[in-house]
Image (cartoon, rainbow, N blue to C red; front, side):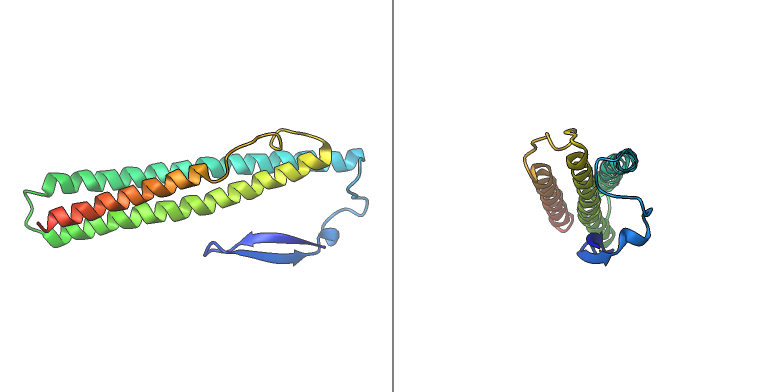
Length: 167
């Protein structure tokens, strides 16, 4: 029996006690047998594929939401001096802020899944004596911090836009 980590819909980690002995073949052992290696290699490939999928999904979601944000921003810029409907422009600006915040939340959740998948790859590598992901040295959270700063910059620009709407 071991602990699995599950990410809830709200993004919080829950540890579950799961007894996998009932799900695995009786002859499964974590040793150097060929049967075990084949199972681990299949799991490794599936886990790596899933990690890459989630990494791509992070950037797909980000690109779509930031593009939508920029379309709204461009529309408001063209309407600043033409429109008398300040409430509508303010609501659109609020939508822009919401899209930026949601983009950050969604990318954080997807990145967390990706990291869990790569962690599992590293565990399998340790078991099989591989180094593909274990040998990589990458500054922790640097990309996440840049993403946070960009999110804050987007929000600041939206707040300035709202002030310009009401000037």
